[in-house]
Amino acid sequence: MKLCVVLLSGAADLPVESLGGRTPLAAARLPRLAALAAAGRVGGVRTIPRGRAPSHETALSTLLGLDPLLHPPVAGALLALARQAPLEPRETAFRCDLVNLYGGAVVDPTAGRMGAREAEILVKLLDEELGSPSVRFRPGWRWRALLVVGEGAAAGAHTEPPASFLGEPVAAHRASGPGAELLRSLVDRAAEVL
Image (tube, rainbow, N blue to C red):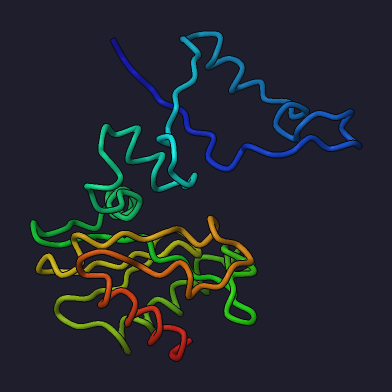
């Protein structure tokens, strides 16, 4: 049996009056998605455990059978895999999104939907200024960069994706857990560099 899990990350939305009270997803023409659904089994699954704030990271961990409280974030590891950026056994990969801030809050979690070339330039600058033998910044996909931390230094840290706290103070959503101090320092220094 072959299994394909299709994640419509970010597809949830509110009904829009101009669409007849439908959500954008309900109003969209999706012939290929409909064909996939017709050829397989369709179902739903709770990807956010009760009592947890919804986030992309939590959903990915749950879908992979991991407890998001016990395991490091998986989005970075998946991005490293997609970019064919091999990790050493004691390295942890974090997705390191480039964002726009105003007044200490995230106002755009995509940095203006930054293109690949612009992101590459900024990520290279971050690596030159903040990188070390155990800290590497690598291009990911457009505004989604990759931070690789070695020697297990941040393996127990928990992070939140910037889109999950849009408009809220960044200071209230800083990395936590073992190794978080290194990540918090890198975020602070990256803001100064950029």
